[in-house]
Length: 225
Ligand code: HEM
Image (cartoon, rainbow, N blue to C red; front, side, top):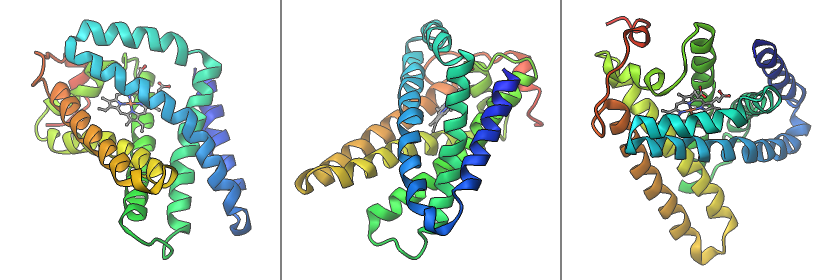
């Protein structure tokens, strides 16, 4: 697994570095879109697995176990982690390159949601890999622990809320530019509504407000209180 992650890290950095040159800006955008298909498909089922958790942790764990049999196959996981790393870093490059060219609220929403998602992806995937290197099972308790050690909930609640909202906002902006003009506002509005609702439910779930939650001590130790 660690070899695969190192390969993914190298591949991600190399792809961004090789595409940094200004005249090669368009291929970077095209690759960013292609990689978004892989990362976006994963995130959709990933979030669906979390939503299943509102029916109980056993349900969440059952879905996670099934999903892991797919994305923890070394080749698939290497591809996913490489795409996630590339997605985040290429997104930051595009954000920087496009400064001064953005016109209108949707373009700005796309930029801000993408910027947040890029940083979230890099931190989130880094945290998962770090947790696994510590021998922790990166399950619900791993994700929720930060919301159960004051004052860390003030960081983790907005951190997860904005991640889920930013994902749907970013998808909504992509939909906005690609549907017939008369459907644009409805498409973006629907994605933002789904994002707000899902973000609220998932943060409440992680915080133990939807189902009773008890976090094992080994997950709490990494947070100084
Ligand atoms: C409430 C929101 C979220 C929670 C609680 C959460 C939690 C987790 C957990 C526990 C894992 C480890 C899974 C495992 O061990 O199999 C994980 C992995 C991951 N998450 Fe999230 N996640 C959230 C949102 C997101 C979002 C919005 C993205 C993308 C933008 C994302 C991208 C990933 C990726 C790429 C992995 C790595 C998968 C792998 O192990 O190969 N997550 N997340």
